[in-house]
Length: 168
Image 1 (cartoon, rainbow, N blue to C red):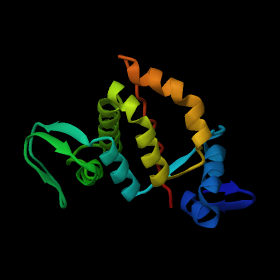
Image 2 (image 1 turned 135 degrees about the vertical axis):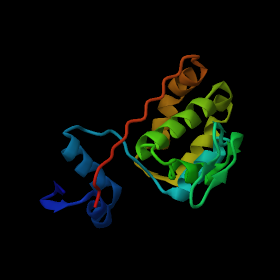
Image 3 (image 1 turned 120 degrees about the horizontal axis):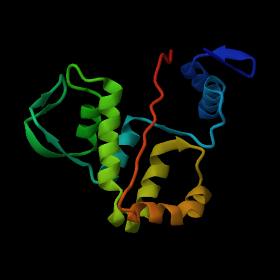
Image 4 (image 1 turned 90 degrees about the vertical axis):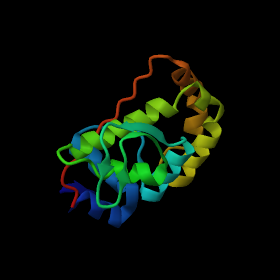
């Protein structure tokens, strides 16, 4: 429970009360730091962005099966729907957060290469249409050269920082 504007609540409660801007304030108070930007994405948005990135070619050493997904051993191209399900259904014994983050990192490293630079305007349009964020077109335009430099750099480093815990 975090207090924002004299109102104690959970992240979900702050979102229901005043949306993402309120959750951003709650996270800032909880983590004792300022946050420049936020991005909120739901299942459909994640699926659309994964598809726009071209999906993920992933090798399963053993067959992979959960209640909703079955993939035989071998290399497979996972589209947005399938990758989303795989990301959210870790194999038994795997830490769910580590599993999700490793697949997300693999997707980003494999998808964001030099060829992505020529598709960046399209990818950003897909991003804008599928998330709730306080990022703006101005943010993208002012950072476009840095994005190009990053995509052309042979030694990319993608770091995903998890925020986990009890949310309700």
